[in-house]
Length: 430
Image (cartoon, rainbow, N blue to C red; front, side, top):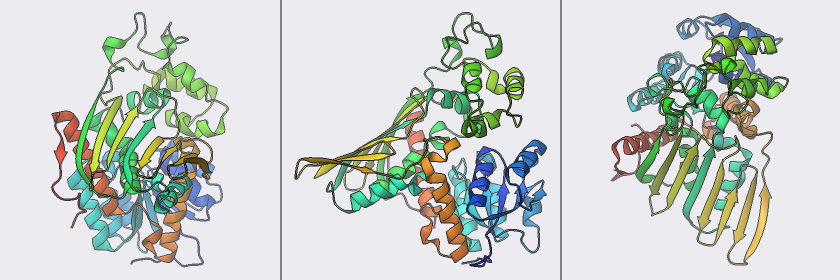
């Protein structure tokens, strides 16, 4: 395993893409003792914002990942690749070949061929690659895995899993935001819910054999635009009664440090009342959600059959509050209902109910680090780089590629109205 990191000196970390996620990982890594030594970010306002946040860090800035990869000797031990989804492949492959360990934001890449290219490059270079499937690392998930391993509910028979995106979060990210259109990002199931498909594979711990899926863009369409609505929320006479009015959503986050980091910092680096008003006047986040600039689905169901006959259903929907995922697991000796914080267990043998509290903190949003999962992921990655021991990494390249393949199969099913069947288990790239 290639590692230059000393067990005593701080891990040196490069951030490739200093947007919301990249800056968040940098902040969390620095708080855990890492040295942020390099940032690749062409946007001057984002460079200034990360300097202001990471006071005391001696950062070298680069305009491209190629400039970073060309540095001899390397200026960091590892890199976080948090560029837009469709621009993961080149920096991930190039930096792997240059000897950088990688923490790669999900999804790995929009297509299977590109994802296989990343996996192959990482393995050929002998570097560690962890994908940001943060749900695997949460204290809640660890508590659930321990409970299942103890045999508390016998063998898993079926699972119901819900991802409540949140009405304003969906409007922010998937109607007005960077993930609004498939051809510039990815299908919503990949961009948002690859977390959940991956998590189900981790929890059930069996290969998938069959997949079917249904979903569409139901609501955020021009034909559903209310009579009298304007094209921009600042000009709209209906903004006080519209659930998706940008003015009510974004103004309501001002003064909250957590939500000023996200979503407000996505609108503008000037997170002030004046800055937000300017963004609502000029930018995409002030547009009416019914203008038709989006095409990704706003709700979807995925049905899964795993080896051995275990079944799972997954629902993702825009039309909820933003909250932790909800899961019901039905076993042969008991059942579990979980809400991201608490596991409620029913023991059939004793007909007894009890609760297990996890160490989830804050709320489920990216702004709050997904209930502590982001911090746990960063800690695992830094530990792996420091020690050279990959065992702390729960979301390696092969596991992530396998769960990505399930997402692509679900999309194939949804768009072709068919069931996708694997005769063999979903296998990692050779």
